[in-house]
Amino acid sequence: MKAKNKNKISKFSLLAAILFISGMLLAFEPVFSIKNIFAVTYVEHPSIVEDSSLNSGYSAQEPNQRTPNKARAPEPSSMFLLLSGLTGMLVRFARKSYERFKRLADIILAFVAAVFALPVMAFAALLIKLTSSGPFIYRQDRVGKGGQIFRIYKLRTMYVNAEKGTGAVWARKNDPRITPVGKLLRKTHIDEVPQLINVLKGEMSIVGPRPERPELVRELKTLIVDYEKRLSVKPGITGLAQVWHKYDETLEDVKKKIKIDLLYIKRMCLAADLRIMAGTVLVMLTGKGAR
Image (cartoon, rainbow, N blue to C red):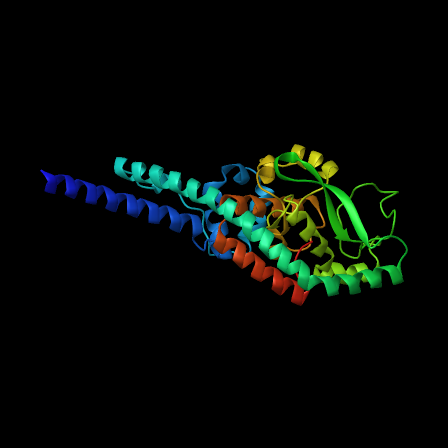
C-alpha cells in the first residue's frame, strides 16, 4: 500500500515538475527573435489584424512569413487543454515573479548607470548652457502605468518655448525646434539619461514602452484599438519599438510602434529585456533607431 502511494506521489511530483519547467521556459524563453515576433502577431492580436494599415508595414519586410491558417489547426485534446491551462497559470505566476525581479534589477542598474553617466551628463549640460539659453534639464508631464501622470526628466534638446505656436506635436526629422547640440544628444540618446531618476523613483523601468504626453495619449486612445493595454506596464527609458522601428514622422509610424509595444507587453521576459538593452547600446553607438 505504501509503495503504491509512493508511486502516485512520484508521478504527481514528476507531472508538477514538468509543468513548472514548461511554465518557466515559456516565461523566460528568448522569444525576441525579431523574425518570430511578427510571425505570431496575427494569431495573438486579432484586434491588430483589423487595421490593415498596421499589417501592410510588416508583410513587405518578412515576405517568407505566412499567417497561420486557423481552419487547418487540429482539435486539441482534453489533456492538452488541461496541461495548457495549468502551464498558463504557471506562466502568469512566473511573469509576476519576473516583474518583482525586474523592479530590483531596475534599481541596481539605474544606480550603477547613474554613477558612470555623471561625467557625460556634466559635459552635456555644459554644452547645452554654452549653446542656448535656458535650463539644461527639461521636465514634462508624461503618462505612466495605469494612466498615472508623472514628471519625466530629460536633457533639454529644444529651444525654450519651442512649442509656443504649435502646441504638442510629435518630433520629426530635421525638426527646427531642436538645437544643434540637441540633435547630437538625441542621435546618441544621451538626452534620456536623466530618466534614471524616474526609474529610481519607481515611475519608469529601464525597458518598456516609451511614455507619451497626456494630450497625445488622449488623441491616441480615440484612434488606436487596444491603446489602453500599453498603459498596463511601466514605461521605459528604452523599448523594443525604439530599437526596431525607424524615426516616427506620421500617425501610421506611431501606430506601428504601438503595435510593437503591445507585442513586448505580451512577451515581456528576461531574455527580451536583455536583448533590447543590448540593441539599445548598438543604437547609441551607431546613432540609428527611433525616438
